[in-house]
Length: 280
Image (cartoon, rainbow, N blue to C red; front, side):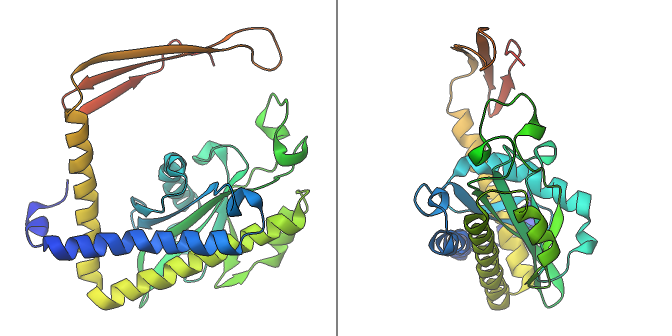
């Protein structure tokens, strides 16, 4: 929870204006990505997400495209920043990553993200995730009857794709060499870079308008507001244990049934998830 003295100094009307502005930053990022992308995955299916994180890598706002990607973002961004080192990221730099062992989902979901600076000070990070048509591996579209992650395509640990606003051509060519759909994939990568550039520009405009100290106060207030709203929604659910079980007919290689089971315990404003009983 945020410091109450800080929250008490927040004007509720101004807070809503800034909160909406932060959301619109990510919505404009999404529009830029969708309009400049090459693949139908992005342009038509809208299988992508754009988000803004504060300097501590906490999610602040996300465009309403694929909210499920936030489940990856909240682990992938802080893990990647820690692995690469925030001190090694300069204005105009962007990392590319899809590492499933660092918070990523399936390999086709590739994230490009970078820091946002204002007058030499770190504001936070902008990120765009897109489902790429192909990331190499044993089958077109990188989807097939695979039994290990290494068959699915190229695993990208955090690496600097953009350095001070310019694409690192050596890294770019290395990535594209692993991929079947080179032209489309290159276009989608450039669209992600463009989306992040738009987000960075809009965020620095907000900081210039309100000042860094007030901007930080509003960001803190957004986190607290989200926390309170989420806890209130959970508290409306009757306390108790909720269970569900389902099955997959087979695992793709054997005739064994795959068991899916979950138990959710609600206690006040807290929820506990228990996946004991699920097959590996």
